[in-house]
Image (cartoon, rainbow over all chains, first blue to last red):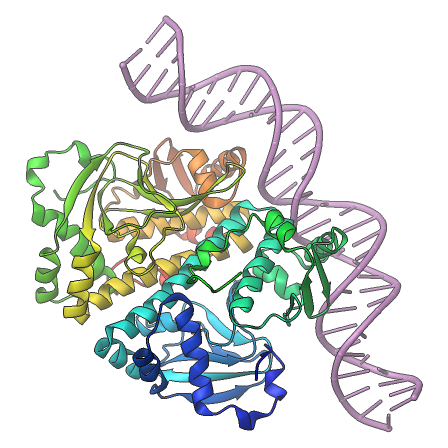
Length: 261
Length: 261
DNA sequence: CGTGTTATTGACCAACATCAAACTTAGTGG
DNA sequence: CCACTAAGTTTGATGTTGGTCAATAACACG
């Protein structure tokens, strides 16, 4: 499997995905921000992993839960979000294969938001116990996990900036930049194009905009020749201009040299 | 010192602030989210702390820095923020005595935002080395520090919700709710009123609004008898209504029972 | 007292939301 | 393969929130 796909690999030949290939996703992802040696990688591969196959739009963890496992995304697109009293939703983050989207539940008992799939997805559950034990025994692993959490928080900060101080078109461009770089680091970009199974309503809920406005902003970006998006596929036509519109600087993603763009 | 004050204690009798009183701030703050035993508290008090007195509006850490110490707020009001290319600012968080606002620099080298004082402040610098060493030796301390970081991230998430999905008046109310609960937990509330040395421009930069609109929103809240604010002092007149306007639910602050409201 | 900062006001404007309808697409069952 | 349906996208018309600009008022401080 040389080129992975966010949502298609579900329908690929599953015989090829051995257990160790699941762990490889995790290893690769953690290695993105913290350098891991061979020993670390071995150790990570010993983590118990209960794999589960989920339909699209299914809740993985709900606000208020007290989970005893952390979730590892193996395939598909996963998001964290909060529902408000008036029925509106705010998406907090998007997660790709290799991400541990609720690692914070290791140290913070109660979930203050929910986690669910957009696409059909495979996720792995890793018992907190195992993660704690390994982190305590192997500080390098603990450090890698913490760095993962903290890089996550850095993304939250950037989203605050995005929502607070950028106009709609820049917000959209910035989101595309972020996702593009993160997907690139995972080898999930083919021909400058990313498959994001997000509706315009989903984008609106991530960007704090209305659906209608998202539609108009996308049209503007298409018209200006910055991106070309057609349903689920979004192609970055002019990366430099996209970055410019967004005011994007990838350093907040805290990727090691050689990862990202 | 029974009643502390965010900005006034600077001018109090400093003879009474022994080293151990500085550490007490940290202990009390960490104990808010993670239960500490006497041994943990002892250990925390052994951390080396270089205390420094800073004028108002001075930068403590700058975006791009690679700090070797973490900052402990001892007195005063501190904020994290990002400056954008067009000169606008987005405040990311506000920090009170006992907070460790850049603890993430322990694991993430490069600062992706800046840290500075609003008021005159006293801050303590704790070498990363010491924090790492103690965390490794005493997992309970490591855990408390991580929980502090993660509760921080929970606040970022709530700010994303605030900026993305709440109208201006609710945003303002929500910020007041958060600060009120956090200050209450630190015993920094006197007569339902909090001293926040923030200008309306500062509030605007925290809430993603314009100064003019902040002014009008504050007037509306005053007019509705929800808060009374007069310069730097903000009094919560009707807490229930403030919560209602904000849609506030303090659980995202992840305080242990008995802390908060 | 000045002088600089902050708060307040009014007039006007722009960005974005809302509403409602039409259109497109993908999927489903006959 | 087609008709039917549901979900998503697009459009237009209109409304509102909140931004911008500019002037004035109120403080705060040396």
